Length: 130
Image 1: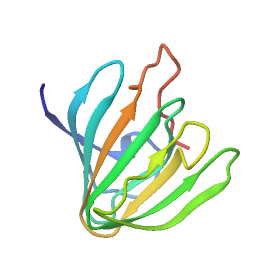
Image 2: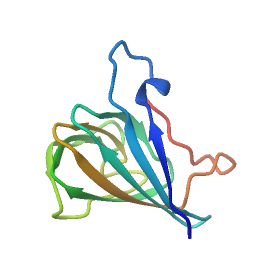
Image 3: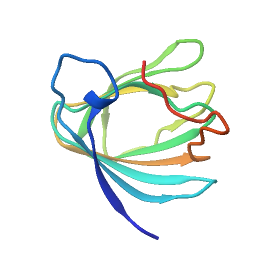
Image 4: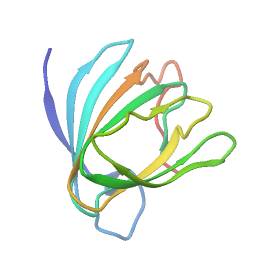
């Protein structure tokens, strides 16, 4: 097993006039069946509206809170409010339950994600920002 830390800059993935704070991304493990990762987010961090096609996402907010907006299919709002850690583990399914979502952080927080199966461009499982 290996752990790598990257800095993820939202501005490199979407067009925005805002200067958004970087997000630390800790890559814990990835194989064909699943991937483990942690996002460490500073105040005012945003992960824009994005999807996880044909992937089940288990997310655990490890500490503090953030605002989440999530949509199911077809574009039905299923969550619009604060999530507070470490209680609960939302599970996002590929065709419902908010697998298209957005996060806005007010205070420093960390999110632990398990994705299954892992991203794969060959199998058309790659996220997209909206």
